[in-house]
Length: 202
Image (tube, rainbow, N blue to C red; front, side, top):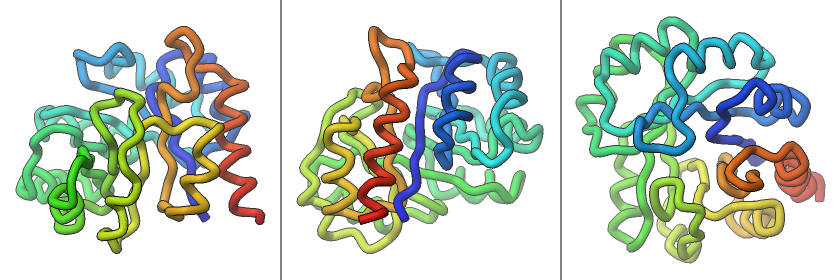
């Protein structure tokens, strides 16, 4: 069954909406250049309000490994998602410091990118067109991957059903596709989750 990840949550009302929709994962973005950036303090407050059945993923771009480990060990996040140029050694260090799962993100533009994702030592890989740009990449490139992956990039309630049907990803990851005017929209969150679950029931 394809899992659901709602990324880029920033406000208490976003958490309340997620608790109602019940995705498998939500994401906090700790990359300072992102318009969805949350501080450690904000994330701690939001995590306290998050339903305990939902896992919180921290999204990082070339962040200090010790800082990521601290967020994991303090249970502000449950999983680290790495979007920069992090190495296998960085992933090993995180595992040593925390024992928590790691997701490594890859921008998919060619078959070579699939090979790199296939070889990652991370627990999971996330396949995207860019860095939260809301763009769909060529799904035909995914024929070469044989490991479970989070599918991201331009997903929304209108196209995620087709993605699940065609690709059967481990998880469908959405951020801009559940927003209206740059803010999370509970109706779009619910519609996205319903579209994924509808495919799983058929």
